[in-house]
Length: 209
Image (tube, rainbow, N blue to C red; front, side):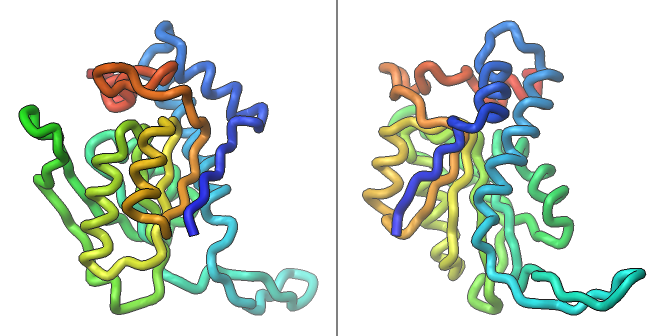
């Protein structure tokens, strides 16, 4: 069932959004704020992971805790999605990383795949987190979801920092089984497809290009 989980009401999320949005934020501060926001979105998205009890012996006694009981995959959409992967691996060092590379055809404006490195997801229980800082028109997100489903992925979530209502609507219209976790749902898109108020080009600002 489709759902959007927006974290903007959290004061730390809002605080870091101010840093990301400001045109005066340099690349280093932008990266740091993006990493903090990514961490908060990732924590929210992983709250419902399947877990099982495991005994653990402390210096005082034996007790039980819950451990993740499935393969976790982070799937960045190149290139900007790489900005969120490191935080995912800090949270779950045992996780795997798949890759989907997309670009937008300048004539058709449709996303085109130029690279992918993914496993056969039918072989084990899994949760896949597609990561991309910006959900604008939804074209790239839908293309990535299509590809992952072709590889057998069934438990999919989309994690973003900023989302436009148009992109959310597009994803849900084609993939009503997807959940979206985002720091902020913004006002919408301008006439050239940029999110307003947004933060500009996330990849350029993160990588300093």
